[in-house]
Amino acid sequence: MCDDASQEWEIRCDLAAAYRLLAHFGMDDLISTHLSARLPGKADRFLLNPYGMMFDEITASSLVVVDPAGHAMKTEDEAKINNAGFTIHSAVHMARDDAHCVMHTHTVAGMAVAAQEDGLLPLNQKSMCFYGNVAYHSYEGVALDLGERERLVRDLGQKDVMILKHHGLLTVGRTVSEAFLNMFLLEQSCRIQIAATQGGQKIVLPSDKIASHTAEQFQREGYNRSPRPWTALKRRLDCISPEYAT
Figure 1: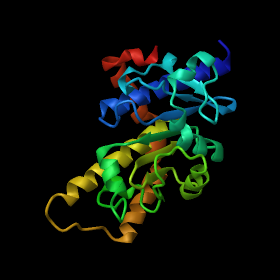
Figure 2: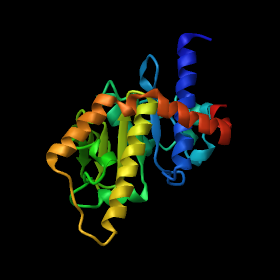
Figure 3: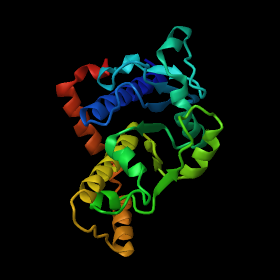
């Protein structure tokens, strides 16, 4: 097997694992939303889930290769994908060389925070890791208009996490692992915020100095870039859902 083929299979397995893990942690939305990954050595070819499959059904071999417009590269696969769903992903992939993986979710906590005026608050150590580094994109309706891509890319800039107002969450990574860990932390931050604001007591925010210091610590330690959490997560999948790698 050639190097490109080996690398593609590894990315397929990682992306399928990410789909399964989103379902495992309650971050899926029936058959909606997407996770996508760039193929090695092919700047304009990406992997996307077959439309109509639940996230806990995705396997490495079921992922479909698409072009920047979201069209399947194999004619027989065209009916399996949702072209419109790739609008957001294609914009980020094509604008950012480092955006090898893009994830988008519609979780209850994520959509709730996306509806709040102040966005993500530094209420906890997890949310402080994103302090000053969360992008926001205003809602423009269902993401079917290709013209929205320019504005979405502008709003994201060089940040790796974004809250789509009145819509959901988006993360970017240089690897599937990095994009997933960004999403996991962002989702946990949103869940903490919704829980805290429902507690009936006044919310206390840390000082800007402390929040900024915490963000710098996370950046320096590189938690989202460490292979250890991802390796541990895949071990869990090997026990509870090993068919993801088929």
